[in-house]
Length: 215
Image (cartoon, rainbow, N blue to C red):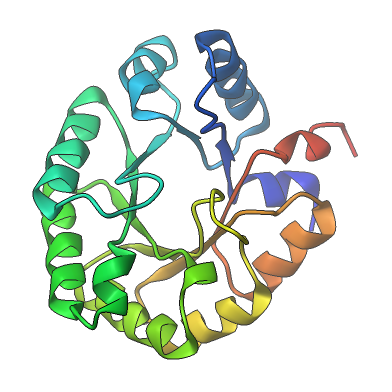
């Protein structure tokens, strides 16, 4: 793949809690220059980024990074982000509910956020490093049934990030219309190519700069 082909699949990301506006502005300018799929930024910056860069595809995260907020809170957070101009929402599931077998809680929160997103893209972060094989299979079905556009491996704040073996589990268990986003620990060009070859449509990473130099 060319650098440009890889960049078209990348959500150019800065979710650091200490990120200043100048950091976010640089991220946005890089995304426009190098044609990444989107920028993924804290919700605090969504409105300002969209006003400063109206042509930019803006993604933000909700229920982040632990996901144990009530569904009503996630729904409100998503609606606020969309009102501020977010084009895509990445939500973290309630992992505790999944582990307790309360699958209906997880399904209901995905549906609630789906409704709040309207026609905007919804990606569901399942934090694979915390899940067993059975839980990964179950959550694939919940994400599919809940109407999400993507299943996403990780927040990048957990004990581990994306793993190729999890992409295989996702592919075997998600609905045909659900796409895959890998995130967390993707730092080299070789890793980017490997995850795309495995079936991912998006990559969430803060290391896109390694591709910015002309080929």
